[in-house]
Length: 371
Image (cartoon, rainbow, N blue to C red; front, side, top):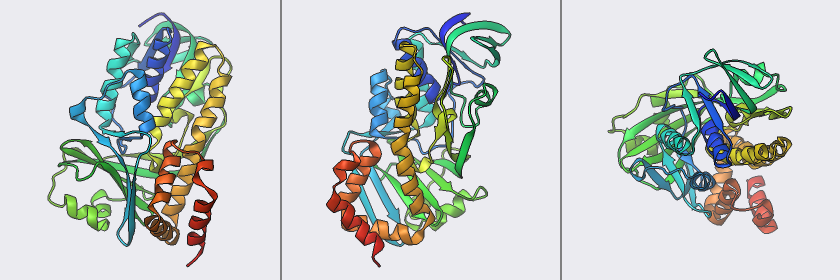
């Protein structure tokens, strides 16, 4: 462990690793500390949107071709409604196991000279000095990336965190050839199941629900089309679950020294599929702010980065809450697939709201209000 560094990163998930890599490429010395041992896993849908894959390439991170699957778009399905799908207009996404993504980020961090302290713990911080496993380490900036229940966010006195919504996610893998290069989102009442190809012979199926006591297999049986596809397939991973929360932090910086990133800085519902992309874009903004020694620049950039995912998350949650609205929305987009393609463009950042068009908005609005 370095006894001095420019940037101390607390937390070694994708957000902490991507920030470390970006800062190191800016010529800064970086020490990353995490009590876990890699690779670090997490229950998630394991899909990365095109903006995220582009950011990974910019970092110099290479996903192993044999352990990932290209994603071409999104497909919405429902047992009792029309289905609709559209391709990404700004490149391909990637389906990849969380452990493979973590290993790829970790390898790149080693290449650029990040001092990785796995199995270590930050015991105390006093001004710009940390005690790590009993040793002192002086730093100029500290990045807090220890997750949605961040202990250091509270200990350092960041402003109150507002919890808007809490749901629950469960994930399991199946050894089978993907039947589509699209992420499938199967809509039910108060729950969704996501199917993401993560390799040439493996798919990830994730359940998002408001019921913390939901049983994965029982939920799967309610999605008839999906259940029929995997009925004879044996799972190749253990069921893993976690909390999916929508949180907002009023400020993601404190003074001239500390900054939050990743889920520690707030989060949107996993229904957006935007978590990794947000972390990667925020890492770039934070490294730029650290380089010029002005964290206010990151504060402003973070708000901008979060705005679109928050808006899209609220729209998708409205479909989750109301079966009537969901059925009408899916039916309308099925009749007008070009609208769904534009919504997907908005969601991935390939389009602006102004590109949607008044005529499209009026047609969709009329169909949702009528009937």
